[in-house]
Length: 305
Image (tube, rainbow, N blue to C red; front, side, top):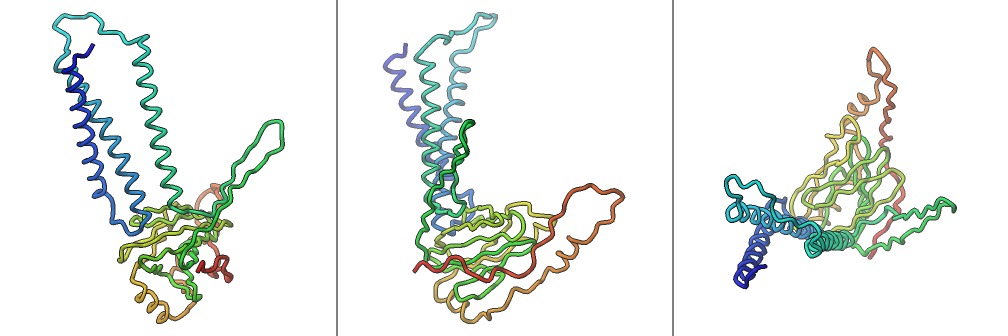
């Protein structure tokens, strides 16, 4: 049984752990790239929260182990068994309830932040299949969130292209700062991935599905868009520049840039990828032929305002 002094020491120890863990969690913000969107702040908050919990658990366990080694070491030639905790309902309840509550807390906080990220379009389908009844599908309605404008993002092997509200098509993604923008993602051949590390958003783009991401850039600068999915031999070339700029600069770029069809600067890649390979045997593996260079001509989502 613990004495009153030992309870006081345990309380100070836990308080110290909380302070140190919180400090380590705050340091986690410096481990990440710059926060270029409001959504990135929410993701970093979750990451800091998880780091704080991990640090608390790690330091707590290490502290207990060190305490046991220093003050409760078995004496020399003492081969007797230690105190048995088997059958102690209080300890069983403690180490069952604490991890359960912790996991539920992390799941709730993670789901809450995921909802705030405002990723739509996968038509969240819940497959309610029972062995005796025909399959039933319950579709959760996706409610479009308000955005200042919509930009269509087209991706195929091996390029990105972006179409703006004035029908300008470019190989560069320009976003106005401090204004919410919906990116309507389209994959024309295989599964690709939209990933900008400074945005903290990584979304798979699936052929024949319209997937929306609504984001709000908050930091001007130049960033890099990469394909986060292995989409073929040359997927490492799937990069594009992303510019976050003030609204007047963005509008100036829109008006000054000529509305040209996307030029095929990597035709050699497409030609090389579809040519017959000279091998001594046929592996039987199918190769996906890159999509045609034309992009969809009809916008499916218009401006919200």
